[in-house]
Amino acid sequence: MAAPAPDEVYRGVTRVFSVIILGFGLTIVAVTLANGGGVTSFGFLIGILFTALGAGRLYLSLRTTRD
Image 1 (cartoon, rainbow, N blue to C red):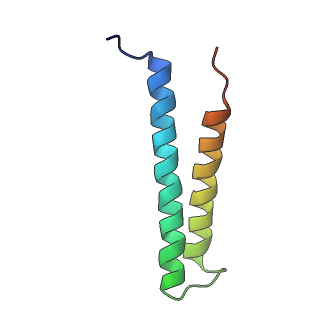
Image 2 (image 1 turned 60 degrees about the horizontal axis):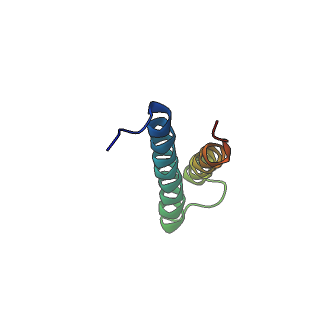
Image 3 (image 1 turned 135 degrees about the vertical axis):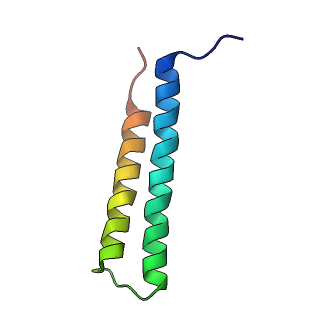
């Protein structure tokens, strides 16, 4: 069994970390709202930022064409 190419490993790790960052963002939003924070609270805004960052990076990594 041959080892995967380094660029395939990089793509896989990028997708895993993107999902983790997305999960952190959703968790931050949920915890902020559960503790009484509103949509203008710092925790909510940071959570939305992490969620957008993770989703955007995941989208870009899935959109990349293979050579």
